[in-house]
Image (cartoon, rainbow, N blue to C red; front, top):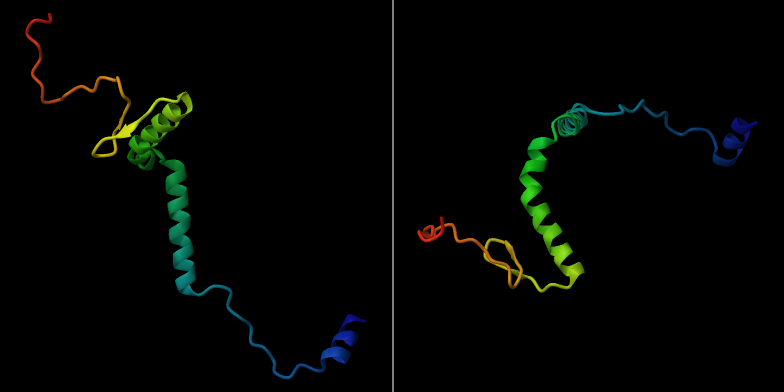
Length: 99
């Protein structure tokens, strides 16, 4: 019945269609690369997460400071400082009077 309706409404097929290839070699290579990357990130996430850890901690500190109402400033290099907080100076010499 559907075949009859199709032929009646649209007519006979004018040109036979060739079977289409689903994926070419290029698309298969791209999908294989993406698949390998997904599995690598799923099985070994430590390296990518290590590289983003500093930025994530900085973001968490900014959000926490904003929620508590503390004023924050950003130093050169993107480090977060809170007024009143003491920032250690890595080039300073240790105080000889403190033992």
